[in-house]
Image (cartoon, rainbow, N blue to C red; front, side):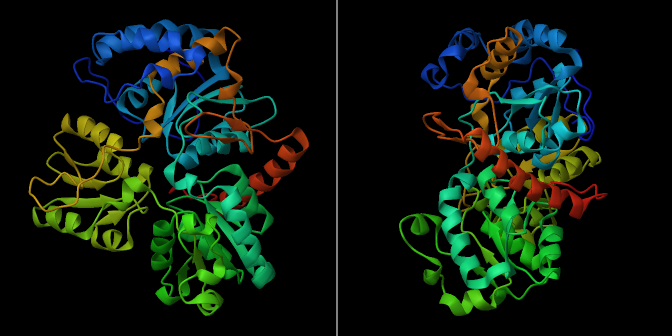
Amino acid sequence: MRSASTTSGPRPSGIVLRPEIPLCQTDLPLDWYQEEFKPYAEEYLALPDRKPGTVLPWLDRYAIPAVDHFGPSLLLLAHFYMGGEIVKLVERYGGRIADSYQLALSAARNPDAKHIVESAVHFMAESIALLAREDQSVWITNPKAGCTMEMLAKDWMVAPVAEDLVARYGDELCVIAYMNTGGRVKAIAGRTGGAVCTSSNAHKVVAWALSRGKKVLFVPDHHLGRNTGHKLGLDPARVVQLPDPKQLAAGATIRDTAGGFAALDRAQMILWGSFCGVHTVFRPEHVAYWKRHGWQVLVHPESPLETVVAADGSGSTDYLWRAVMDAKPGDKLAIGTEGHFVRNARQQAAARGVSIAHLTEIPEPGYPAAGCGCATMARNDPPHLAGMLDLLRLGRPPTANRVLAGDVVDESTGRRERLGEAERGELAAQARLSLERMIAIVEGDSQTT
């Protein structure tokens, strides 16, 4: 067990590696890898299985020399939704598993970490970069790891709508940008006097905006927005959803909102129409089934409002993971969130006599099913981690994997659009302001996303 940078913030996950447990990951085809990573992918794909007893010795060949070379200046990070091998292995090398809020603060809270390597999606790495110091570099193991929710809320889609709303409402309008947005959208929040929020502090951030007499454009997840309005006790008629993002991209305008300008004028919250495909599948009937059979049901607030209301509790990935790790022998939890998260939770809880089920894994016909998990997050795999660490140690890190504020990456091709230095500096200042406002609003509160 090697130690890289000692991070502050996220506590150890409690995950225990056992050699006989397969690591849940679907192998990527070789042509999905950048040229620099193909040698590592070829070695990995030739391994006889995906168990820790096989994968660890191979990964150790690359990770341990990098950790020894960089020492405390290297910080390894992964999100809870990552597939089993990355979540289980990052901590082996002194890294940390965290949620998006904790990841965003990692650079600022660890000034000695000069090289930050993240296995998660691009908007998370960019948030780290926004709060990083000039002497800290942020790298993502696979730049094509995106987010379907964020893909429906690119800045070129959001900016015209925000401008139309500002033209109508002036300074009354502010943008609250969920963490699951790119830096260019976070900058819109900064420019309009808004802030970033996370799944567990959204209600605090929105309440802050409303208390200042603001009309909120909540971007991008309409489920989290609606759940936040419900939690704050807002009149549902004053929580209004804009047209489908694809319609807006095709030429629809705010005038096409259901109820038109009258609905927008009376709205306290105006919701962008994006969503997370992983969480939208959860239904009240799923909740009812498990509760009938004596299980406690916990869901993520990116789920539909009706599902959140029916469940026993809802909260961020950190909230859900703590519920699993704090459960007592004999407890039974049905969890509505990303599939890799639930599989990892089930493996860890089983050793303590705790039963964990995915909310849609109902052994009866007639219930809506769900996919395995966040496919884009899973694009970060052991070959990407091995390659990134080895190439960084050798002084040959691919420039495509460096993350700077304002970067936009095509999730299919990997093509990157990068701003010039002056434009990037201006955008970073605006986006950083929106993040700093969130931190100020929730300062001292341990219930982060």
